[in-house]
Every structure is written in C-alpha cells, then in structure tokens.
Image: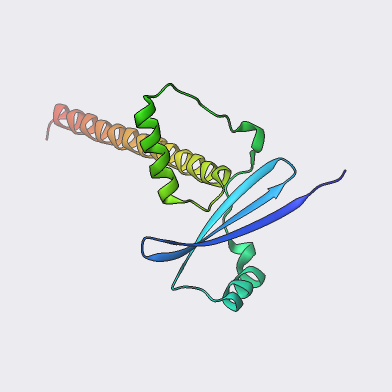
Length: 143
C-alpha cells in the first residue's frame, strides 16, 4: 500500500491578522486547518510553529477530492465578466479545494449546533411542562 502525504502551508493577511491555512493531503483525501498568527510571523516563527504546534491544529474531517463538483449555471455575459473581474481582483492564493473543505466544515458545525440548540429547547419546554403539571396537581389536592 503506497500512501502519499503532502502538507501545504499558506500564510496570508486577512483583514487585520496574519492567518495560516494548513492543508494535509493523503492519497485522495484533503483536510484543512486554520491558525491565526496575529502579527506577521517570521520564517523562524513559522518553522517553530510547524515543529512544535502542528499536532495541536484541529483539521477538518477528511474529504475526498472526487467529492468536489463543478456547478455550471447560465449567466448574463456582462455579469459574468464583472464576476470574473471581481474574482481576479481578489487574487486568492488559497487552494479552492481547501476553501471548500473549510466551508463544508463550518456548515457541518453550524448544523450540529442548531440541532443541539433544538434539543436543549425541547428539554426546557418539557421541564417547564412537567413543572406546570406538578403545580396543577398540587393545587387540586388542596392546602
């Protein structure tokens, strides 16, 4: 069994902080992690981070590269030209697969949080209902 491991680190300035995006690729699976450095890291600081803190990075669940599909939709040519111009102005240096993996992980976490909040709300409603029922029974018994 021949496995290929490939790790890529991209350090870029986002809004007000320097952010490192680490991609871990094993065969046809991709996992991504993001770390905020704050001030601009020097080369020795990045090297030290990779040596000492790489294991602490929380990578997304591995996603197969075959899972990414290209969606094509019909668009007005002028609008398409504007969109292309806007994308070229951004000049994103991060691999689109890693961006997609991070977006999927964020969506997954969001859905989990919504589900957990829903369960907690149901439990609160049930507890309140039981409390009201107990008060009704207490009232009916008399003082």
